[in-house]
Amino acid sequence: MSILLGKAGKLARVLQVPLWRRSLRQHRVAASVEHESVLKLLGILDLVVDIGANRGQFSLLARHYNPTARIISFEPLPSPAQTYRSVFASDERVTLFQSAIGPEQGNVPIHISARDDSSSLLPISELQAQTFSGTAEVGRTSVAVAPLSVFLQADDIVNRSLLKIDVQGFEYEALQGCESLLNRFTTIFCECSFVELYSGQQLAPAVISWLASRGYLIKGIYNAHYNPDGLAIQADFLFERQPAPVG
Picture 1 (cartoon, rainbow, N blue to C red):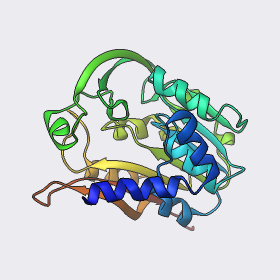
Picture 2: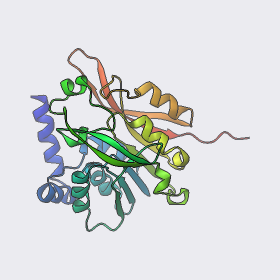
Picture 3: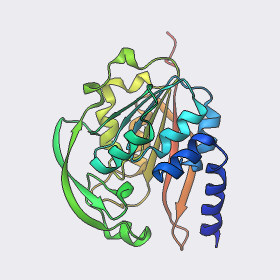
């Protein structure tokens, strides 16, 4: 019942905002309103980089709260990328690159989930399929991957900037792919797992430690998911860049 109420509440919220309502009706894409508290906390942003953009759910949220921000997104799968382009066809300050972000440039296999927003460059584990119904692998294809610096220069990342990463177990590698530009971002919003949902993935402690060593500390934890036994499965982490030491 709580899941049904959650979905009903999300729908009610989506229908309150004209941009979100239009996207839902025309493209069947709902803004990710579960992240609203984060966007409210961050205030006005100049740039949002959305890695793992899928159909534009997070970008819709970001656009509502940041009407003039530049939004640069990355989605490697053709079908959701095409939907994203349709959703933002009239928004000249949104750019989508059909690519994944990682440490090396090339083409790699992607494991396609029955729910394409659960697809990953890492194999989908049995635990993922058991924990989140309908996310088992249904196919594979090849997609482009490259470091963020292939698409952006340091001067493109100005003032208040958010790096959002939601890439189904590939977060650590995606962050490595952003490393040369990482310190340009004021905040990072990243989904992390506490258990291995995708084979070979780096878990939350490794991601947290890697970011801490580069000057980013946890500012907030959101949308934590637990299994029926109370074991933490995953959550969304907000990291903030710390001021450089003086002297």
